[in-house]
Length: 390
Image (cartoon, rainbow, N blue to C red):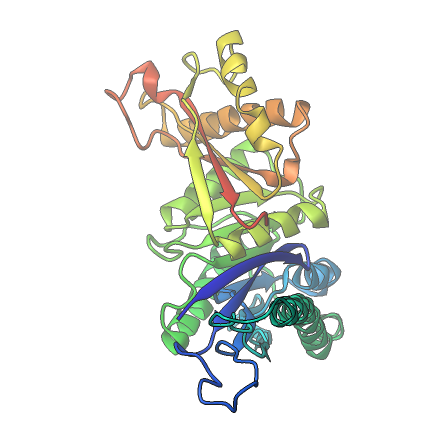
C-alpha cells in the first residue's frame, strides 16, 4: 500500500492532506479487453493528530477574546473545553470538532503493457493528465470541506452568546491556583475518557484576576500553559507565576498582560496545538555577569547569528533563562526571567515577531556546573519549526 503526503495551509495553521492508496493490488485486472485498467482507488483526507484546547475564564469579560481565540485556532479533531472559574467550575462548552472528511477518487490509470500504438500511448497520457486534474481538484475540495465543517461546528457552539449570559464568579475563583486546579481536573477527565491520544498537543489558557496560590507538583504534567491577566504583571509576579507552573509540571509557561494582542495569543496556541513535524535546535548559551540581566557585546553577536532562523514561517522561540545558586529562590527566578526577557527584547528590536517568543525563567535549576559557576547564569534559545510551515 502506498501513501503520498501533500501539504497545504488553511485557517492560519498547517494542514496535511494525506493521499492514501486504498488496497494493495490493481483493479480491473480481469476487465474486458480494451477497458483501461486503473490502480487502487485513492482516499484523500487531512492528516491531523487530535489536540485539546482547555480554557478557564473568570466571567463574561473574557468572552470576546476567548471566542475569537477559539475561532482563530480551531482545527479538525480538536477537543475544546471552556470552563468558568468557581466552586465547582462551570462547564460552558465541551465539544470535539469534526474529524477530517474523506474524498475517494478513482485509481491512477495503469500504463499499457507493451506493443501499443503511438495513438494508444497518447490516449493513456491523456487519461493520466485527466486523473491528475481530478486528484488536484479533490485535494482542494478536501481543504474547502474541512474548513467549512469546522466553521459550521464553531458557529453551532455559540460561544459568544453562552459567555455573555454568565455571571461573575465569587471572589478568589479567578486565582492562578484555582484556575489551574480546575483545568488540570478537566484535562485528567479528558485523558481518562479518550486515552493518551493528545500527546503533547495540550494547551491550557487561563484568564486570571491574580497570580497567587501554590500549585501541587505534577498537576500540569506536560501541558503548555498560557496565562492572560487582567492587569499588567510585574517581572517579579510573572516570574513567580512561571515558577509555580513549571514546578507543577507544565512543559511551557507564558504569563501575559492585557496588552497582548489576539494574534499573539492565537500564534502561541496554534504552535502548542500543532506540534506536528516539529524540528528543534538549541542555541549556544548566552552568559551573564553576576546579578545582571544585561547583554554583553559577545552575547549580541551570538544572538545576531540566530536572527535568520527566527524570521521564518512556523517558528516558535522558547527563551529559557537560568541563574546560579547564590541568592534566594525568588530572587533567582526573577533574575532568570529578566535575562530571558532581555534576549526577547533584543530579538523584537531586530524585527522578530513578539508572538513567536515564549519567555521562561527557570531560576537556579538545570545546573550545568557547580552551583555558583558563571556557566549557570545563562540563557538558551530553543528554536522550534513546523515542517508544515504552521
